[in-house]
Picture 1 (cartoon, rainbow, N blue to C red):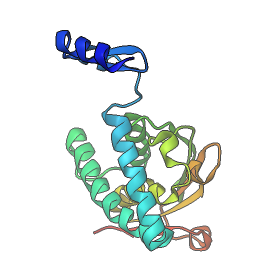
Picture 2: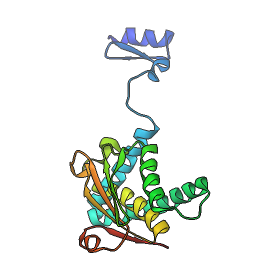
Picture 3: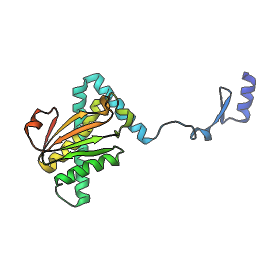
Picture 4: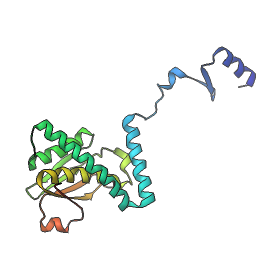
Length: 196
């Protein structure tokens, strides 16, 4: 557009911005199809923070930092469920139900594959972080620490093994929550949790 015509338009319509021969008004900006809302923003923030940590200090250390956050969140969630249920401790079956429920509330799709006094095996079809978790295995420490801290606080001991994760390219997650220190639990690679 010639500069003279552009200047004349701005004189009469100062709120209009001419871009590539199309008009975008301030009132139409909010109607643009941009995939951004609070949820996407926060998931992206966590992804970028965990990625920066992984790049700067390494996967092991990044997982450690995220574990601290997960443990704190686990305590808060545990307290909320116990308060709502009006109990001082959750039973094994309540722990299993709470862990599935909390993941559903944050748009995960966890389910119980197997449950016994020794362990609970969970499957998951959808990560609460959605595609933001891809290549960010340190983010899985949120699940490990929330599950581990809730189970240990109520049942005395827990060990969480992340056998398969969406973060590492699997189509779903397989998480084993050991509730007793059995031979199988001892051999499993995972993090241990104890009642505070």
